[in-house]
Image 1: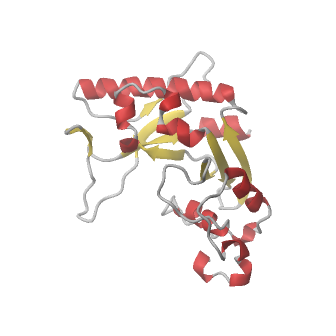
Image 2: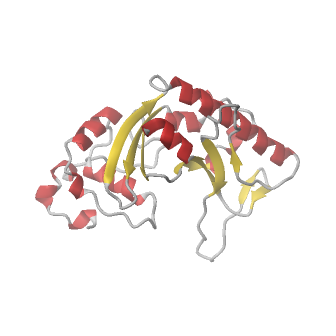
Length: 221
C-alpha cells in the first residue's frame, strides 16, 4: 500500500517531519514501528523503500550525502548487493588517490544502519555498523578501495574503458567486499548517459560502488 494511502492514525510518526534525526534515534523509532506498515517493494525503484522508511520514521527526505544527521541508512534484500554511491560522485577522489578514510564512501559507511529484508520483502534483521564496532571489516574495505582506485586511475591514465572491478582476494579470501559495476537507466531520449571525467569517456553508461554479498555475510551471519 502506498504511504500516502495509509490511514493517518497508522502514521502517527509520519504526521510531522523533522530535518535533523540521529541514526540511533531513527533505529529506536523503527524498533517500535509496526513492521506491517512498511509498504511492499516491487524492486523497480531500489531507492523507494528507503525513502518510504524515512517517511514512516518522520524524517524529511533530503538530497545530502547522508540520510541522517550522523550517518547513513541502507535497506536491501538478502543475498543482493548493496548500492553505496554513484561512481561519478567519487571519480575525482579515485583518480587523485584520496585515501579511503577521506572518501565519500567511507563517510557513508562509517556509521551505517543496514536493514535487511527477505526475498519476499519481509523485514528480517537490522544492525548499526561503524568503524569502531567492526574495525577489521573497515580494514578490508580500505584495501578494496585502494585496489579499485588503482584500477580506475590506471584505466583513466591509459585511455581505457572501465569495467567491473572487485576488491582483491587475499590469501584467506576475506576481501572483495567492495566493487564497482554498471548502474544506469536510460535518459528521456532512450540512451545511456556516458560516464565522463575531464572530458574523457570512461564508460558508455554510469557505474556505482556496491557492497558485495560477502559483506552481508560478514555483517549478519
